[in-house]
Image 1 (cartoon, rainbow, N blue to C red):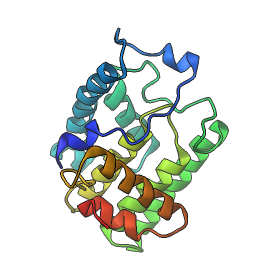
Image 2 (cartoon, rainbow, N blue to C red):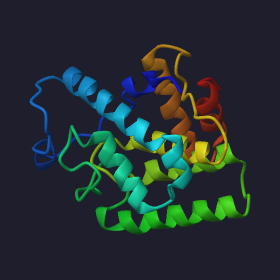
Image 3 (cartoon, one colour):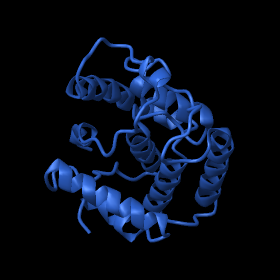
Length: 200
């Protein structure tokens, strides 16, 4: 999958003052932060999709999910790899995060064991539910997309292009957000199409 998708910010979550204090590098602009995060995320991506590690990893575990976020953002945020403790405009209440993540992991294991859906659909349903939970202070979209890539690769399918190289970043962003909103209404068609082609 082209790395360009990680340069496309599909919505930055406002951070609390305490969360902002967790910033590790000394930077002053959003552009500097985006660039810093981009390189950090690529490092996490290489770790997650290493074929040797992927073959042995239990990717459907809270341990893996947290470690992936930590590796994607550990050079950027001190709270990387830790569930959020504050409410956001999105997601479940903080006290529900661990329980809801556990339920999602269990449901996904069931889908795989019983071939309930094709591999792409399993990975994208997982992605959508994880976005709804919104387990971290920030980086949820990028983390959940990479988790979907990890899962679909583990199931023997290629990574998702997520609309990369199909248009300008803003049109890709709008298509993705529209697809997520439709998925919120149990209409996954646009999300399935977007993830593989970027167009629907």
